[in-house]
Image (cartoon, rainbow, N blue to C red):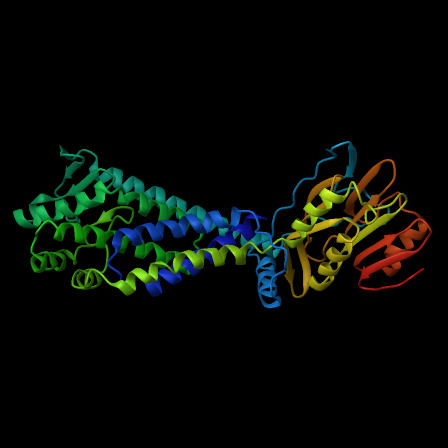
Length: 466
């Protein structure tokens, strides 16, 4: 799975889970639980795509499989091709690999071009870099405001006192405030509020959401997510202040009084950083709701459903395990001596033909798992897959188009005392004249099996017999 597919899956999970939070939980007064939910959304978004595929003995329904296939083919930019190794060893069987350039006599080399995927990738990295620079700039601003100021050590935090016209805020264990702008009662309310942020380490939540935004800036949901992370932290601090016995209306008037202050430090816990109207509304709502508690029980099944959806079941993998267990006793399906298998993939191949190929190859104990495939205007532009033969070899292949056509890949497995796997661009040098004619004149895309006695069977663009 390439970085683009990982990013796509992570943003899908984040969007769906936050959508559920926004619809069901954002108005509930279980603020600490909501904080845990929001942090769990971030962790789940980036962890679930890394988990292994779930396995089942029965395939998904056609509708789910189709949607999963669409997700697997969508990618904001193509994966970078992997560098293949020259030799691999599996058990007692030696597998010789000729890499991406077994230069065939009839292949045409194309010079480097700038593809659309490269442009998109460049744009993504530029914006991410700009956001990172902005993040560093904000950190420098936070450091500058407390430099050469009066520092008053208190119980568990440091109060940084200044004389500038900026709202009070906290950052980790620093409480930055201009005491001259508040009377005694209001000053105590502000300090009580910010001490909650400091004591519960709310700065970590803000920094985590900011870092996530650098990676997921193209997803509009992440910007709304970041806003609600801060809003819920203010709910927590407001509730803690009111629980100390401070008059509710006086505290709310104080919020209105400070709401005209400009926001200057987005990485900090600002006293007036969230919509005052929403905070006052939340202070006046009922605290407990049996229906509200029930809503939280829906998150876990949704999480499981997302895992099943973005990591589709791997029936083929389960079949492979079965083959591993029985291959020693029954190898009639495996490649026989002198039997060659050719797999040819080009820009015209459809997802249906690829599926046919994997099914037919599985009958010969050759298992192909397509991790990612990208289409543009119905033409294949990139593919990422694993090819595996039980007790023989396992290899990972990533290839992408050159901007005008998809680079043809041909795999050749020669069975016998020694097994060799060849793959690369063009037609292998050691293929016979008859096999070369079959590949160049008859096989547009698909898979064929060329047997020793000359009989040819195939699935793909054409079906024919010698």
